[in-house]
Amino acid sequence: MSAGRLVTLTVCLLGVLTGSGVSAQRYEDFTTQTPLDERSVLIVGFMGGRESWNNERRGVRRLGLKLRSMNLAGVHVETVENTRRFVALRLVRQAFDRSGDGRLDNAERASARLILYGQSFGGAAVIKFARQLEAIGVPILLTVQVDSVGRGDAVIPANVARAINLFQRDGLTVRGEREIRAADPGRTTILGNHRFTYKGRKIDLSEVSWFKRLLQRAHTKMDHDPAVWALVEKTILDVLREVRGARREVRGARCEARGARPTAP
Image (cartoon, rainbow, N blue to C red; front, side):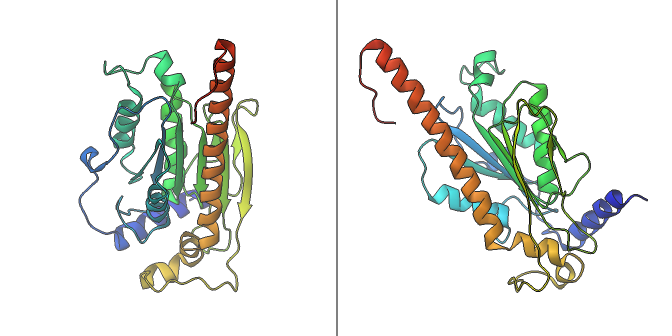
């Protein structure tokens, strides 16, 4: 058995043994009102393991709630169970189907503004979902993988503009993807592969089950490491600022061409 398959089976087993046991996520659990206008950005975070979409003890959900609390204009944030990508796909389709005709036309696909992030199995789900969106022509502003565990999660599809990878290699059973690379370097910028180490580092795991502390210690420490999520947050906010800056430049150029002053964003 390959090392990659062993890691995947280990995480699956741990997910079954430590999962929350709640019912699966439904589309109705989302709070984002669709469709979104052309100035809006949709951020989707994929949970790790077999965690529920609303588990506030996990880094993906905590960051999602923090981004929501910032009340950023035109920014909508949802978290998704990594096994429910079809629910996320429905959200994306309805978010950007501004004509309401049940399909994404060329203009709607081109104007989509989407950011994906995820941890563990959720990191791998980010790349699987990005490939699904590539198949229907939807671009992605940014993907973020945190200690990504899965098969085929190292190659970033060409519909992704920017990608960043955070990982650890200290775990005995679970180690994140060490290096991501672009399928098309001309279309995707790799922002970095950032390694974190937890040998001798104290991270509060008081709310974590003994099973995870024993068999997924480094992997779990990474999920609870404030420095990890601070970098994820900063990367997302930097991209949001870049997108808004580009939008202001376009608006200013259009207004200048008409001889008018640009309005505030």
